[in-house]
Image (cartoon, rainbow, N blue to C red; front, side, top):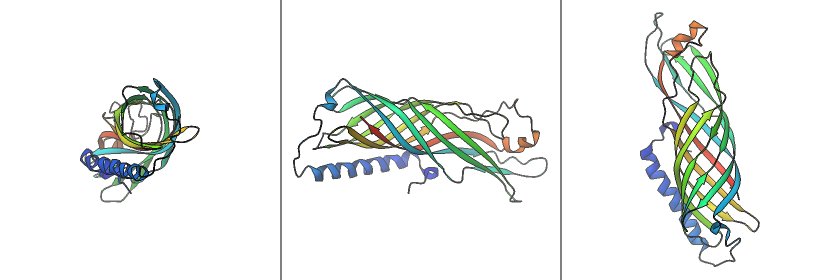
Length: 245
């Protein structure tokens, strides 16, 4: 199982080629016996339309300050576990070349993150649940291999401007609603008799520091000790989607 907390861009350089190689090996094995192609001209349309449903996990990467409070306490924050979220969206795909397509995929991601603050010596804890309702509008390039029978693997990459509609004030941590993700992933087109099914796994890395340090909204001053414990927050997601076209 992939540990999202340990995942870095260098790891993706190793993971993505392995996933693509597995998909290529699968389609090569299928090519040993030629079959009748389902919907042979579906990829030659100028525009493709569809919808998606999927699951995802959200994560925050928090940078702790290590500041000691006046009471002599030092707090550290982390997201120790993940909860699955739900994703739904629509797909618009523009045919560029035989192997290359441009996709726009407006998507809603519903999920939450459980941020746990722990005191270094006393073992005290404070928990903040941060729910999210992201509207994401990814713009991706999809590079596909040659179609073999009714299978066609691909890799994708792009950027995804995102807005969080569920940001709430007055908590220990306050984040900005806007972010922009870099997306990298792999998938495979399955050509069925009546539609095309496309499972896809992608990794999303937020580019912005989401931490809002201007806390004029903070009415409970006892939360200041948690607010000051964090200096930076960046967001990450792993998304497993199923497109229907």
